[in-house]
Each structure stands twice: as structure tokens, then as C-alpha cells.
Image (cartoon, rainbow over all chains, first blue to last red):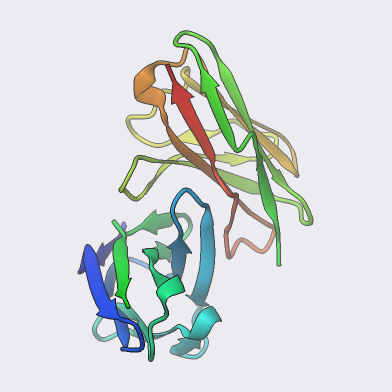
Length: 110
Length: 115
């Protein structure tokens, strides 16, 4: 069994400030973990993935995430938010098939 | 990177009709394809998993006779919503996975509106 919990349904930041989107997971096996972004009425775009290599994963558009096994976390961060980052973000755990978190809506204020 | 397409991108149909949605892997062979639906402001819910040449495995609560899935080739899977009703209106997203069994590549989604 596996599950994903995105701890914040909404996050609001000002442009230029750091972004933190939190994700905790549970899995009976060593999972792969992903972060996806979805803009309104669009499909999913992969931001980054962890597949048991380096625990600090760098993705596109300046995003990165750190896999912490002891905390069962995979939080997504970005040092400086941009207006174009406003979107829905999904944390996904995969140990055979994908389970999606409920999503976090990121709002970026000018 | 690997590309997955969906057709159509949107469709409007009358209640009682059937609608077919295609999912294609354009530059790789997809041994496994997944179908999800997403309601507004909600997450993706897995409907079924299909392996090429075999019957789809449906998630609990998904009517297999209503949502017909065919994965006849390594690059094409279809989802047919039979006798569609307004409550079937949703955003349907497919994904595909290759022989390596790792990352899934997602299609752009199909918005179905049933009047």
C-alpha cells in the first residue's frame, strides 16, 4: 500500500520569495517520487523525479526537492518564485503504479 | 523526452451517446498505459491500467462496462465512455510507460462535456 499527503492545499507567496510545497509519503517498498505541475486546463508537466539516486534532486525551472527517508518526505522548493509558477502541483509516489497527492495550489502575488 | 498525445483535446456530446478517446505514445513503445479522470479542482484518480494485448485492470468503483479500454498496440490505447451521462463530464488523462517500467509520461488530457 502507498499513499501521499500534500500538507498544504493552498500556498501563497510573493514574487521573488522562496517557495516550499510539502509532501509526505508512505510505501511498503522503495518508491520513486515525482513532482508534477499542472496549469489551468492543461496536462501534467514533470518537474523532477527521485529514483533512488541522489537525495537532492534538481528539476526544471529552478525547482528542487530533497528525499528524506527518515522523515518520509519529499518537499519541493524554489529559491525565488516567479509569476509563471502559479499553478497546481502534485506529488506522486510510484511503487508499481502512481498515487497522486491531492495537490497544492500555488499563488504568486506581484 | 517521450511524448504522449491524446485525441480529441475536448469533446461535447449528448447524453446517451458514446465517446472514444485515443492515447498515443509518439516516440516509444508503451507496454503499459494508464487512464485517469480529474474533476475540477481535484487530483487525478486512476481509473484503470492496461497492458498491451491483455484486458485492462480497473480500480475499485470504476465500471468496466461503461469505460471500455482497449490497448491493441504498443502505441495506442483507447477509452470509450459508453452511454455517457452528464456526471461523466470530466478531464480524462492518459499516461504511458515503456519497457523500463519507470517514469510515466502523461498526455495533455481530454475534456469531456456531456449535455
